[in-house]
Image (cartoon, rainbow, N blue to C red; front, top):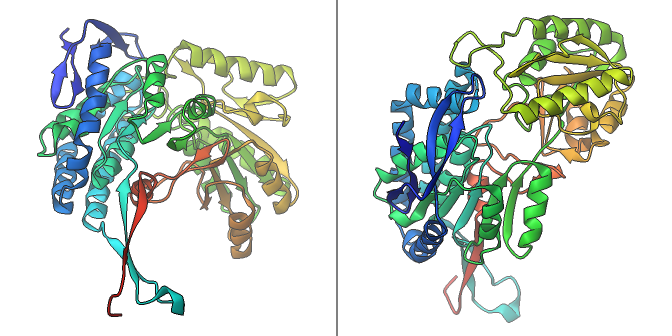
Length: 475
């Protein structure tokens, strides 16, 4: 098999060593990928620094045209990229296809926002001593961006870092997950087809320990990180003076009140908790159900979960793929076993079938169990009864995480109450926490992170306002 090159500011390199990318499903070799040398890493950083002034002076239409080109090429290579995701990450092809479609949308939205980039005009003659003055306020990049991406969305979460950076004229260096680096390298191919300065984009498939030196490097003005809370907060401590956007973990809660469509709620939880084997930060983990409909909902959920099909990710009928590796399987199995030994009851699943963990529904759990209070990142949900809607809100807020929450109710007052009182970045009404539209503001509170993604919002995170004061002007 030919070794896959990495991308350094317009140049494809092999490095002096390689690492293997293997399918989580059958363990077969998907690709050998070159490992950048220290000299390659330095070249990527130096190129990003050198091109910054040129890139931020590009015309809006130049950036927008390049982003549109990438979006169109993603659509043209849809089938190929979907299969790539399924092979390297084990994501079922039906969901890999959705990811590719969303990535095309992400670049398209970035192109549209790039065309709208402008500034604001503000009169400053609000008090007599200020005189006849006005201000123009524009936004400029903090500097080159370091993007660190996770394994679970190997194309679209890379897109959520690359697209807004290119839109604002910020060079970006991507460090993809070494389990799934091929999606980022595919995007580098598409970037290379554009007319943007080559130094604006590099992909460094290096280990996390080597990436820490990049986080510390003062040439990067911003770090955009998506991954675990533990790692995210630790690397923020490596460079506290930098701008950080942290999209971290969660153990998302969903409230199902008795006035909701109970079967609809159960079907949506069966999707939102398991479609990516639970390996997404907004995956449903905790379901709080009003006690009067608890038994009905629990049985419906177990029925719908048992109907999910696990198997070969390339099979279009498969719903649930394998976990990413054996350590993930070990963690999920250990936490479920621990919960059952502590009195929890499995309505379905609770069985390890390497490389899968059977989709699992647990009841009779306790708040201190790790399946409840930590992020399991696997195909497991817990279902717990509640008496009052306010009590359910308090239970969700008891978590140290706060990314998304879902609320099923037909009552508008409860919807507004949830929006006001839930300590999360997003409340999804009559759907689960797993919903995300790529243009909307996305991010969390508490240990789930800081900052927001979603093109326009990410563009604001990557830039700072700079004011031009005009003196003695006719107003």
